Length: 76
Length: 223
Image (cartoon, rainbow over all chains, first blue to last red; front, side):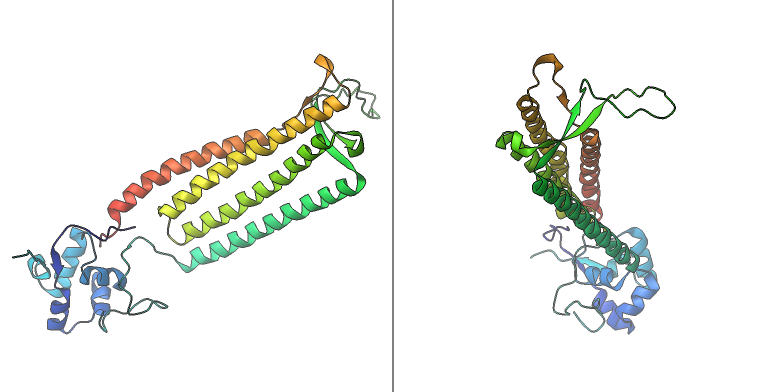
């Protein structure tokens, strides 16, 4: 149902943040209250958007800012 | 996908994560689905068995059944109270098939068969729609296509067999020697209006699902 070719260059850096904090995706899922499947979609850059409420909880759980969690990978 | 990505049971770890974030089937949904499938299966069996029994009996005995309106000269067994009962409305009559043109008999029998097949199709399609709904694919294109097809089949149930039966019954009436204004009319019954109402409901469902699908597309992929 979802459009796989969304025209965006937002990259999620959840992998690096999880590794730096020694946290697993399952633990993060429990803390944030978002399913592992949906976190995996977000982590693998397959999500189309994120709710502010989810972003807030993710930043709280990971102790980071939205800028730490996402970057825009522009060509050149 | 690393070790942190625990894939759902039954899903290969090599596959990419699913894109849809809307499907959310619960065990209760699956139980409901089993109930619906069993009910639909029983319905199809009951429809087929009742049709086959009636058709076999009519075939063996060599008659057809026609529904007529406004038949003059019909008498009813009067009740013990002495109050007059006057027949009105529909009379269902059996007519020997040998005395009728083959075309008329064929039209009535084909109408009966077609009606049974279409009702079975309605029940099966309802089961398929229920499966999609319980899978969480309420607004999936496949569900919309199924509802479209379902609407067409419901319309066919309302129109197809009735047209054939109407033609066949008219032919039977003519073959029996009735002519002019004294001839009874074929009776279509209330099934047509029920099917018509069901078809209108299906059209409303289509509109609702199309609107819902647009909303779902906006929501899908949002974490």
